[in-house]
Length: 252
Image (cartoon, rainbow, N blue to C red):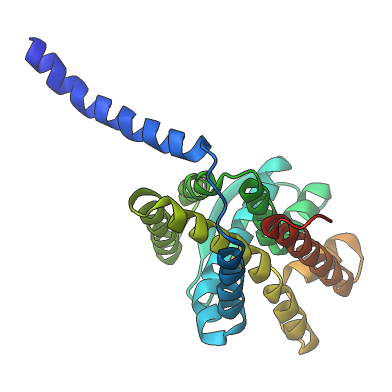
């Protein structure tokens, strides 16, 4: 009987050990990387955002953050989140149910383009406190929660690949490498949040993207879409400046 009890408890003990290890690593501050490493991660993120072939692939990460922000905006304003779809062309769709107009709908629509920058700003704050590994595990948890709302196969694949990459880094790689990756992810979110806003306005100037978030906000509020694009620019650039300063240890 004792042997049977021990074998039954074994897997649970092992699971407890794993969760305990994750928690300890997540809440234990780590030494920040060197200034050279921080700048190198910034340069890598900038190249990824600017170089079109790389951007075409990595933009899916920004789309995930964009649609997740729509979903969070819907939940925070009392709307019912119906599901999220991520598409291979880097577009996405978040469906929520509630009043077709009003503050809740405005906040939900506004959250998408500013979301990646705000997430990046939060990530920069965590790095400032020394929680680089904690940031990576937090992103894993957020992806797991987002997975529950995904409603198409490509979206499922995107989330699983992103989550698996983060788990590999946080579980198998050394603390200095984990810290460097956390800084690279943060820089990518901060820098990558800005480019889609300018791409949006280019499309709008060509008479495209008539169903964009900015045009939806224009219909909801009566305020021109260009105003909302400018608001997206201000928020994402503001997050980049402040988050970049925190990441570099520069006082503003």
